[in-house]
Length: 207
Image (cartoon, rainbow, N blue to C red; front, side, top):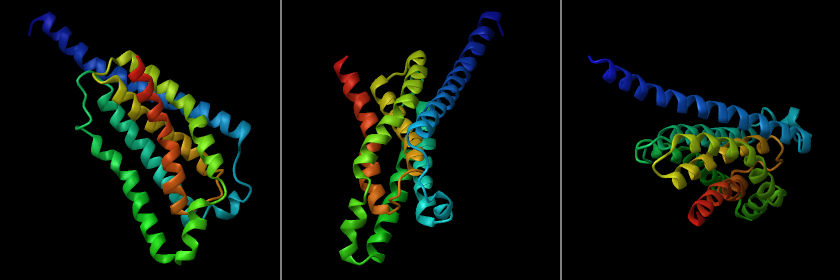
């Protein structure tokens, strides 16, 4: 093998590693920023020690962490030149599928008179405010990593990164939110987590 060809192969192998390292650093930095903001301004729910064993409470983290992890995994693919959503995009359906199943079960178990109270909850406005706010730091870190990688579809890559940032933010917020109903989560968490991707798509469209 010629020296030039060997160097070219080594560079091709090095680029994905650099991008993965950049994304890992962005996720770590984003989590730290969100954690500092969360504990400085919001904090854990008052009854955290009592509800930490509750299945409804813990399920919120199953959903939010699933969203964050799958969106980060998809970002690693779509964020590189030539990457496409078709390669790993199906993974993004895991968190919505889990949440939809939980909401359907809750509709079956609860009497119809309890559907609306569980859906409306007590913290809808706070949810729509705090999740987008907590996602700003992680989103900024992930967009910085993407900007250096030159993805083929920057708008789509940024939107997926927005989902990852929202998943991180929602995980922190879930520790503060006292509404544990799947009906509340499927309604308000979903609306809040979609704000960051929409923001990125609007920004990309205006450029």
